[in-house]
Length: 396
Image 1 (tube, rainbow, N blue to C red):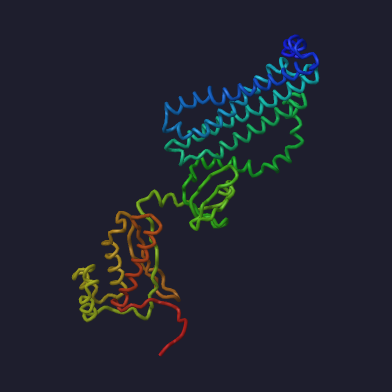
Image 2: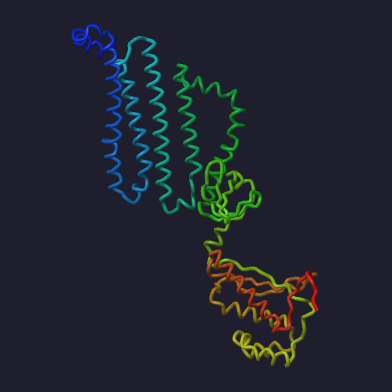
């Protein structure tokens, strides 16, 4: 008989002599009721007080961690109940060596599992607190956090197995040598991802929110989550690409962070000119240009006169460069030029090289289109023609 049953038996045997099982049932029910009361007292009274105190001390930082703190409180309450059961089962439940072994095993397993959950919650809270720091975006540690949680899960599993088998954890670990090759095969991606996470964090290769481009995986967008095994990239078409973390180390990729942190976004476009439209400038040509206010607003009279006896391509390059220098939407502290590339079967490429002050995608595309549209529209004023393949229908 358990101690509570021994205490209740004299009273209940006199009151209910025909119910011999009643003391035993009441002892078990009282033990279960005690665990329920302790759980709800810890879960809803004691631990929430500490949670409210922590949030009151730092509402901005710890207030954001309230869901994680609530999960930690729930696991702490379960751990308290498991320890209480482990230390008091012989007072309430059925006696006997086999029953005692069963109760002790169950209590130890629950205590170990809740201990692993509590440690995992503490690691999660530490990671969330770290993410609130100013430099956390540049040095992400999500992969390291996931590795620590994985190790916690492995250690907890080893302890649970050792309790079930009644052996030392060292005995369980000694049997892993034969399974080393299988474990390495199973956790290959995890091991590679762990090593890659350390290198990424140490070298600051990427961070959450970076715009990366990996053509091999069809990824072109911002990093949404940098995990242990995979990196989630939200593409510009709102699809999500998953890339192995170790691919950021083993393969090349393009990170647009440098552009985002710089003073502008590069515009590099070329206009191909028809070689047959290139000619020498004469006085008549200059006088014709002076009639166009669009040209005179950009080029001064002296520049027009200096272009005499030179090619119309050179004058167009001077005009295009002056036009870019006067454009308010460009960053004039960065490189700005208009240059010729090598002639080819597709004509003479005139390349526009400059940087927009606004790095956002839509304003950048609009600015780039406006510049190219304007330059294409002014080509006839310089007696130049854009080169294009002949296609479609010919009309009279």
